[in-house]
Image 1: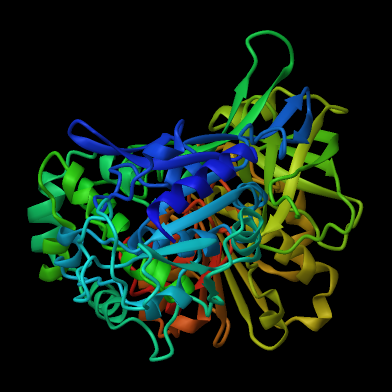
Image 2: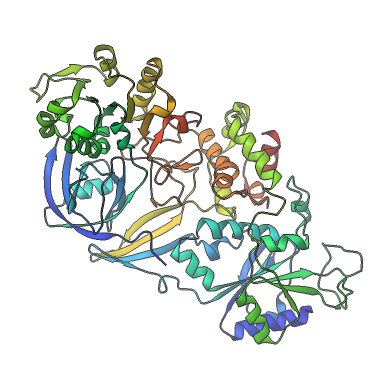
Length: 348
Length: 270
């Protein structure tokens, strides 16, 4: 698929009533923004600082409306979004979607959102992510372990593969000989039918084979899980990062896999009605573990930051056998006291 | 798709004072509702939110159930203001219960501190109702003072079939339905001879667990013969929100009752 065709495809989706969110370069950062003009859509290798997360797990959502003592489930009406396309998600963030899909597999609101969402992935992984300790590279064989509707494999400009190549250029030479800028994969029926309705049939379908590779568990997952489960290094948790962390919670907001939440009621200002909501929470906050009577089970900063790491590197692996961190490095970028997750993992 | 947070609206059938600080609510049971010792429900009061409360009633009673609630926060405060005939939302029951059936093969030692008697009460009533099926049972119960004693109207009946020992931390010298010792619950281990090779069920605050487990280990209890119920903050009740996580367990689903063998290596579990 050429870039011009891709832009036409996006215009086609918009015409069909989809709202399309795509990464957009703004001064100093890349953000997800609603696409107004499909002709301006680009593929950007630098991932948006704020990931896709809010489109699937919004900061706050209404679960019920209530009137006196009766709870009325809010599902369709509560999701006041049209059908959405999240465009340009790289394989690192797609791993986060695989994780969230499992965490929320029995959650009617998440599932409803997913039904209204078309995910278009792409293969550009930024250099800093490629070179962090997870060493994530794009290889075609990871696709069967990712979940997406459509995936665009960016073809290099020259016969030699060059993953960081710009796609804005002119005619390209593809190793698959199609002369296209993208090789198109589909991962769902919805992806297939939207392409076919647009009139594009030159895609390859990839059936999701589950998150775990045939060779077995991710050795990185096993390594960090075992290290964190078996040892507690006071010098890391208490003397170093527990002493530096200021509990701002930025890392939890920015993390594509942080999903912990509160449930709370919000009464209307007048009358007996109101809504029951679910909202992002953060294990760094003071009341996260507080019970009636005021006792807190996570009392110190060190206990809280340890809880955060334990969740990603032990609890999620124990639960679903994949790492709860995808290695995007966003938490390190936003941390005001320079806590770097990769350095912490290396010290485990 | 099934909505895991949908509540069933039930009527309050009876409200009694239970000790000086708690109230015992008898609620209409939702359809197919079962009570097992250690399990809890989320009680929903729209406008205030939800709170996890342990079931404390006789499991053989099918059309109603009881919750003993101390006023400690927003939801429990609002609950205390309700009257008979008012309605509350309920979802659950949730969680893994105490393995009361072990008492059919082994002697049991139930150790309760303060409000910790509530989650053990369904097991106590199950044993009372089917006494001949169970081996010997001892209860060690510690409360702050006479006014905090819970379920005092049960004691006469209990004494006949179960070896009941109560101790008060700060007694006020008031009259009680059974003779009470003085001191924290662990002092009972110094005075009372345990039945042979029992399985222990514990329910109380973390500080009680530290001292009671130490005693039990001195008495050569196996880690797998000690069961305890953990308290944690809970929001979802279905193992997603992570407020109640302990190690890789969710107290709401994997617990609240755990064996000490499962918990002893987890930092901060008690």
